[in-house]
Amino acid sequence: MGLGVRINTRGMVAYGKLVDGFADQYDEAMRREVTSVTMETHAIINQAEPVFKGILTNSTKFKAPIVRGKGLIKSYEGHIFTNKVHGAVLEAGRRAGAKMPPRGPIRRWVRLLARRGKFDLGHPALRGAKGERKKVAKAAYLVARKISRNPEPGMGFFQKGWAHAQAVLPIRISKAIDHIIRRL
Image (cartoon, rainbow, N blue to C red; front, side, top):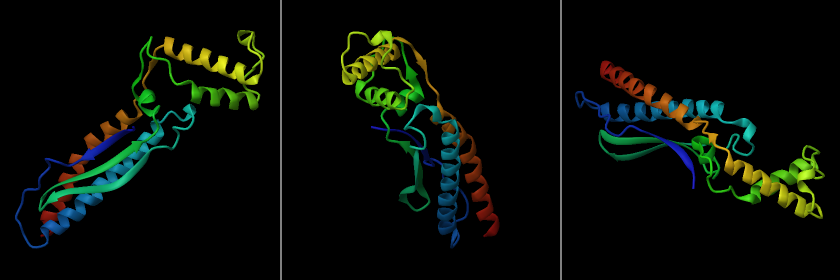
């Protein structure tokens, strides 16, 4: 499961004289522009990523353009994605009363904070739990319950990147095609 943005040129067909070399130059220009916009969009997503949220930081990746189709009617797709399951929650947010998040990652987080001295396992809310393991489990339950009760707005970091790609890609492709036609 993952979250991602797919930058696709499907439907953007070049009109012009079919002159020798046009198809090759068009293909090269489309790959270059889709790669460029994908890299810019990836940078925007990385800047908008919630870096304070832990392992999602720098987990987004991008792939070189995938080309589908033949001749001038091709689809060039640049992919930006994260395979972290909680990426979708950070992007879209949580509604109040939603299902409790999995406690395993929260237990690891509580244990890590306790070892660093940033989480007090002697807190009065953890009374009755004997041993570190049970205190960590109870603390994880309390954190998960708090998360499930409170709505959390989404951060929209992929949305920001997608808005950039939608605005920039058609202009770049149009300019690249005009440049090719002028050179021929």
